Amino acid sequence: MLGYNLTKLKKILINTRTQKKSPMAKTAADANPETRKQLEKINLEAKVIDNTLANAKVTEAILATIQEAGVTECDKKMGNISFKVMLYLCL
Image (cartoon, rainbow, N blue to C red; front, side, top):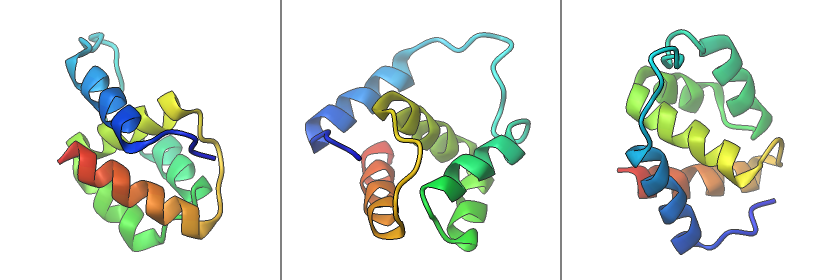
């Protein structure tokens, strides 16, 4: 699933933070149904998904990391570990 080490994930997050956003980019609120589906695919609990969607900065960083890493689905254990690592690196 994630063949990336922490250094690689941190570089991905730094790159996504420094990239300029296009004016047509979706906000977390606009992408809520799509975003929720992506977070459900990595088997996060509903409460965790709701809390993530409430914070646009965290949502954007998590989604960018998921996309960059090429993660589409994973089991609950790996999803929770990946989420915690991504959350730690984006804060």
